[in-house]
Length: 293
Image 1 (cartoon, rainbow, N blue to C red):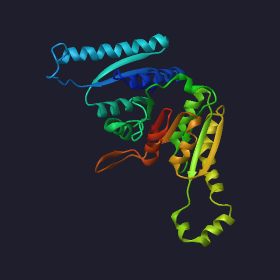
Image 2: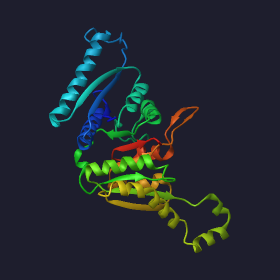
Image 3: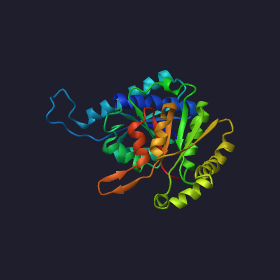
Image 4: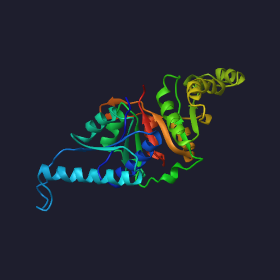
């Protein structure tokens, strides 16, 4: 089944930036574009009679706004197959359901602030944590010029080949569609036991350290994707440090950053993993968060 790229649209500047990004990606991949708006009628008794208090009128305004957004896309991309859907329901659960039917779900963000980065809020975090497909966050003000030649698809690789298959797949597919380089980043740190055993650390140094092992592990994870996408140039980046810090150290090269999701539930709600959270907090480019296969 061929899945569309789906963009969540609510008329805001940030969602329209996400829509523009989604449309360009759909054109590059030869996929359809689906625009969705999660909406449920809520009366506003305090607002004057000039505002739509009834569900039919509010619903009509939502549909008209979505149609206008679709029209703006088809004017820029005349051959693109565009559909629109107003979906009844709460935003988080509705967008999670829409993502399940999509190649990827694209959402806008209000931009970076000093404390909260992409300003995800509870809805954005719930969608990223619950979606079965990749979710791409795009900032308000994102421009096509950021996708210029020379900027890379930066992807974080962790664990064994199976652990990173989903993130590498998205990175290579995106790079192939754009003619871009993939920079694969594998970060490593010393196991805690070496802090308590200087003798073990000396033996490790004499054996060449952990970096050769990490490079070998990265090469093994990349092998099937190099074979599948021989046209994609690959840069292998292995560096000691935390995964989030190492990824952010090369983020200035990126037109898109791709990270895995380690979602879990806690007493205070959904969590998307420290690496994804850190990259979303600081990265200036769009970020794709990919669930484990």
